[in-house]
Length: 322
Image (cartoon, rainbow, N blue to C red; front, side, top):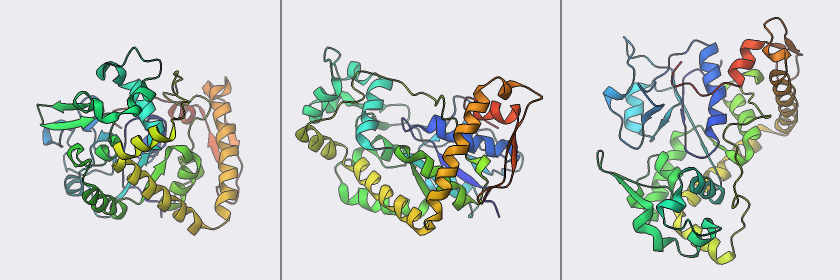
């Protein structure tokens, strides 16, 4: 039976704008009820969840959530049934830092705008910038640091715990128990094939646009490779994010290994269908109300039809609600 109760914790600067769309599309097609923010697409970030910040249903029944929020186990379990599947997405910490540097204009915050390579400048001595990189949100008394353990923060670990690695280890172990799947940005195709299998969904449920992914930008230091000393500094500075990534990277490949060799045959099939459907949806036929694309049945999928409605939803922007 397909699993139709899920929470996708949408993390920042991990490719989640692209990755969230299949979850959104699945919820729309299956008429699922979402717990959604009243405004801005943030149920609770960086602030704790509040009853005034989301749209209430008459019976307080919710099937899905896929907005940005700081993971809050106690609150989520008060809103969703026990059989809810928890999913998220994380990214290799160096590439994550680069993306954060650009998106949040961190060189300006850190007063290193004169540097041709702000990532290199920062990594030479991250601790030098600590008083600048930490941001206090006084209205909710929460400290956030866009350069340090941002992914762990999104998953509920406090910024103040950056150097308490024993506490971080315990928290990550708890996350391992809570989450059925933490997807990896660097292995998005493998992530969605594994998701399909774990959720008992169909191939068409997990396709995403590979022609024009969301928020895929170039910038001068995107390909920068740090020196060994700079990388060592980063591993110390973002120690919790590195432990988070290494833990879930290991469990990710363990889950795939448990699927058997057929997984990789399905992966090849998924990539072929993803490209075919993406090309179709970006073409004139994908915008036509009368044209359709028939994807024939395979070992992993029954036959399905791609029409202009499917294309519109596949290429859509993220909606605040459903």
